[in-house]
Image (cartoon, rainbow, N blue to C red):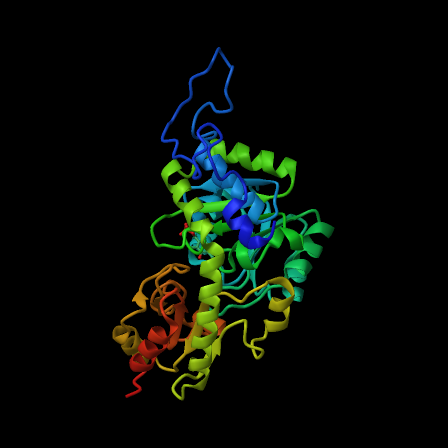
Length: 379
Ligand SMILES: *Cc1c(COP(=O)(O)O)cnc(C)c1O
């Protein structure tokens, strides 16, 4: 089955009992037992729910895993995965990870003595040098937010497999349509399904897939123990989102390329960050591990006040955090998603006050370009 077909027909996609061509929403907490311990596959919906199972089977298939897991948010997926580790264990993370992951590690899990080191994982030597005796995992994002840096998934997998560690990839930005880290040697892939997978700004969810039976058993044990599971209604919404994921990702990428071309030519735009650009430092690597470059663009207009003006003037780009939806979004990382990072550190990372981030949606690209042109002050 090819990728686009898998989005429609992958995993459990219908109800065997009735023939319904969409999996019903099993809005139920518990299941009648035919005798003590005699179950018809389900017992209690924290442990397993048929609608959630259907979604879990789809994400497993989309990521070429053997098992899938659905959580109540991307953060609860990450939290549950990090509970695989114990006090005194050490993990290495991409230095510009999602702010929520940064907060979880440095403010919450730190209290449980999970040790961590943040490095620029796009440079493999940084990672090799950060490995310690108690290092148990590397957690990366590629591309990163907001500078879209690329990390070599295969090389990270070489490090983790030689050292008996786990490679965890947050694949939210690429989506399973463009990038499949399990194929490149990762042990665990996860998504904030709130973004591209849901795709319509109407559900918060997290998805995980693995390809090893023992690891799947551990994650299911934690999923059931912690209980941060996705409800049946939201599971259904994510399945509906997945049916159009391929179409959305193709449309978004085509528009993104045109917007990048427009920004590159604009005299008031000083720098454009997009992994699809041959001048992007991660371009060749990105080409070797993904099938597409996605719909996120960052560009620097050199000045924070001007950037704020642009954000006020746009009509079709909604000023909001989040990404990956049908509607285009715009944000100012220095004042929004990355505001909690001290300004000196922010500048070291390259997140200047004039850096604007776009999440391109599926509107007519001519409207989007005209909107940006007027917001940048053309005519
Ligand atoms: C949004 C996001 C998360 C967190 O997901 P939620 O669904 O908001 O909990 C994690 N990682 C990345 C890369 C994200 O963009």
